[in-house]
Structure formats: C-alpha cells, structure tokens
Length: 423
Image 1: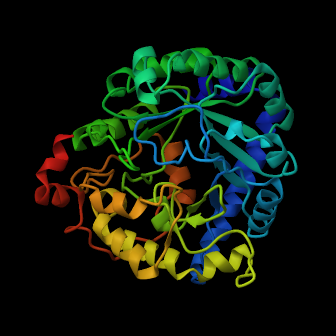
Image 2: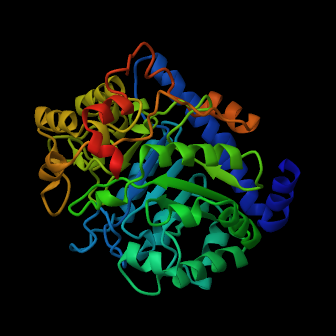
C-alpha cells in the first residue's frame, strides 16, 4: 500500500506542486505546530491553522447549511485578507483553510491567494466553478489544493444540495483539476442519506482510479435555521465510520484525513485544543465555523488597534470557550451541551455574527445530540505513519489532561436524553 501511494503521488501530480505541498504544508506546517506547542508552555494561544470564510454567497442551498448564503454578498477584501495572512505568518502560520459560502464565487478569488506563495491553501468547494482555465491557474499557483465536496449519488446530491444536476457539475470540476495534475481531494459530510453509498471501499477505489489524492469524511452537524436533525448519524454509525477510516488507512493508497481524533483514538475538538479558529467574511473571529458568535475582529477600529496576535492572546471569550469545551466533553460542546454554550455567549455578550440574527434562538432550540466522543470504545490508528504523525503534530496537546468527562460523555448525554440516539 505504501509503495502504491508513493507511486501515485510521484506519477499523478505535478512535481512542482508536490514540492510546494512537502515544503509549505509539510516542513513549514510542522514548524508552525512546534511554535504552537512552545507558546502553550508559556500560556499563550495563537492557532497554527486558521479557517477563513472569504464569502458568504453560494450557488447551492444545502440541507442544514448555517451560512447566510441568500443574504447580500459579503466578500473579504484582498487587502484585509493579506493583512490577516501577514500577521498570522509572523506567528509562524502557513496553512489556511479557505471556506465560504462557495469560495470560487469570490470576484477576486485568485487575488486573495496569489501574493502568498509561501503559504498553503486548502479550498473547500463544490467544484462547480472550477473550469479548465481555473484549474490551470491553480496549477500555476502550486500552493492550493481544492477539497471538492461530493454528497452522494445523483438523486441524493440534488436533494442534499437543493439544486438539480449537482453531481455532474461537481465531478466535472474534479476532472478539470485532475486533468491539470492539481493535488486534489474529495470530501463528504456523512449523513443518513449518503452513508450507505459513500462509506464504502468501492467509493474509495473509484476516487483512487480517478486520481484523487486524499479524502475527508466530515460528520454532518445539525446547525443553522433549518438544521435537519433527522439526517444526523447515530452513535453506532459514528463509531462504524471511525472504524472504517482506521481500517482503510491500512489498505488504500489514498490519504484519509480526519480532524476529531488523535492517534490513540481519543476524540478531540480542534477549537478546544486551540489548534484552530474560524474567521468569517466580515472578519469576525469565531471559535469554529458552526459557532457564529464573536467578540474580536481581524479589522482595526478606533477603539481596538491590537495586532491579530494580541487579539487571540488576550481574548477572554476564546479562552473561556476553550476551557468550557474541554471541561465539558472531548467531543463537540455545540451538540452535547448547547445550553452551556448559550450561557457562555450571554456571559461575554458575544455578538451574533449571522445576517439573520437568530443564532442564539437556534442554539436555544437545539436538542442534545451525540458527537464523536465515545469513551466506551476508542479506535486507535492501525497505520503506524498516521499514529506517529498525530502523536507529534495533531493531538490534544494536553488540553484535556486531568479532566474527567465521565458525566459529560456521549453515553451519559444519551442516557439523559435517549431520543438523541434515534436520529
């Protein structure tokens, strides 16, 4: 399997792009995490990875979307984006996840990325706007990887994403990238309607045959004004998904990413560990994309001219979120204890960053749901390379040390709210 993966990477990807990946994302990304670990020892926080929503608009209307995609377009200005990237680079950061909305709808999309050839960008996209010309531009830049979302079969995709002909347009975007030897990934928000189709070896085999280099199975989270909780995975499905990912990492020559488990199989929340935060199109600094409340912004104002470093380091809201989240559960506090999150938002008088202005009411209306945390059965990595890499550069960094999650664990949540296990 390892030789197959090496052969694929060397033969199916532009060598220049491969070098950019290894240097910008690999070597410099590792150094960024090492700086993060050094800061933690001093009691300072600045996340080594940032996710940035550069636009709120989207051409699709996905079930359970929490972004105000129908509102007036808000696109982050290139100058503001560059200032944010420059300040993050001063802290050693080089990796930025670019999200939306649909990032390729940004009228100056390539103007955002082009000045920063020393960084690495992962773009979360539905692929509909990746023409052959834009794929060529991605290859020219060399430091951008598209992560294109596929949500199921033709019928499922249309229903899941609120439009017709979705899958064919998405796959055309994938093909345009692969034809131009761009390092390309495919992701899925796994839910009830696509679980049986995509959590399968044959789906991974198809991706490998196409030339896709990596994949990412997100777990659907019911959020927003129309959360569609009936699409959520059951605890058993979440556990089976974890087992599938771990097993496939030992068999298939494709990289399989996950962001919610360390190498020993313990669950974690990236925002609770401090490894990442989210910046929305208006520049607000949020704990993560689904928690749409903020106190700080990347923009300078008459009353706040602090650097980005100081805003992260001095934010009592982000600090209290980290502490509350990691003391409550190793999983997702939004799903397991939305009541505590609401109290935190109210305590800090954090502003609702949505256009619709109903995020607090949505949080109050949420039912308790199980998240990735399952202390009864952890599934450690079987692939030694994944396990070693996570042990060194992706784990809880001691955030949960000495914390007892017996009461707040997912099984305990379900014992108190058994209806959460039925959807």
